[in-house]
Length: 613
Image (tube, rainbow, N blue to C red; front, top):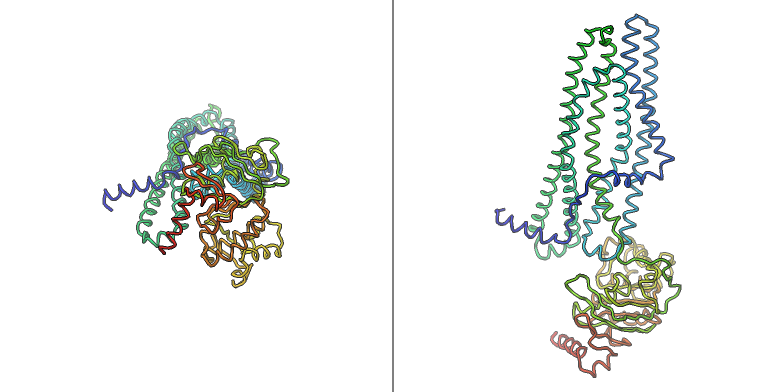
């Protein structure tokens, strides 16, 4: 690829991800946020956590006792005094201690893994539940792939922290503190000489932490971009193939994949610097131990020196000392990764629904379905107003049609009725209750929405129809399907209502998916039914069959129909004609045709198109 081509590709890359790119979260590493993450351990503070800590303390105690027994007792006493009995007891005692350590480690590993899996389960459940409660504006500005990364990848990256990291961190801290106390009690001079390298090591490692943290944040961002593109590519594979864009799409993915690869390289390269620093410190400490320790042995105990057993214990403890230091360096990297992931998780958990419930919100026990807009204004963003001072009233049980050109505000009215958004100005009322003061669940339980691009979930036909009314019996599901004319094609399927359909129902035609959505809406038995271009994907023959079903579906319900087809809207009680977010005219079909206004022109143009065909 030439430099110019690569540059153009990068421009397309940036343009394509204008609204989906996750931004790096610039916050200092703070333990307050880490404590917030550790709060997920609270439910297990009386079960697995204490047991794991107890086994960790047992293991640490064994590791600290054994070098003292070998150096101070075995060498300086048993071997120096040639006492085989004491030496035998020591060997047996050390064997018993190692056996206890082995059993303790089995239970520690088992309990910390159970603890970690439970915490990840709780965290992912909390995040998914919270994301489902967020308003549509949240999803308008984020891609599905980006959200998927937060719920799956970012929570997975915390798994190692909770399964091993926390307990190992405590074990290493306790081990280090124990070793330092023991070393200073054995020989303060030699201990001080060895510890002289610690400040240098911590200074160097501290200087790297900000760069490392930013690098791991960048890794998460690159993963989010790649997941977003993968999700987009899979969902739009038919469009990609129909326009022969496989090569361009592959090149685009290669660019994202390369960015992800480079970000991982940079992060791991910086993280890998910890280990050599620790090994360098270990080497310096070992040289000091051999040189100064040999000098103290030659000096003799009476002149302030040390015994050979003390030197041997120091050698044991020195080996044990640098291992926790090394693991703490790696653990710090793990904490940085966990902090980067937790920041992204808490960013979503801190998001609050823009459409939220007030305290003591009104619960719809029953709903008549009377809808009223009072001077409603709404905009999705500051640049464009979708509705301008709309006032309308829909009586309970009425069928109302909304017509107009694309972008005139029809779907926005439907969205406000379902309270997916709140109006910028004015109020939307159902049965006289301002929707800002009602329970969202009780409102939406009594509203069914059928969209042009209906969504079919992975599962059986029966489960998809039952989605809006989980308690419905099989007989009720079949009856709903019969009413809307879906039973005929369902019975032709290999397993009938138990036929498995994949995500988005790709084994079904567009019309069949739409019929399922009608059955789903009917089974939910709503007080208000919204049909947003619901018959656009249905062929003429199917539409003829469904008109009768629609009459049954609309009977006794308030219905808002958004459609362009004359056959769908001509029987509506009232038709509102919208243009650029305002109501131009309204009335039934006959009255509007007599006015010969905008509606008349829309109908006329539709007939002209049919004549041309």
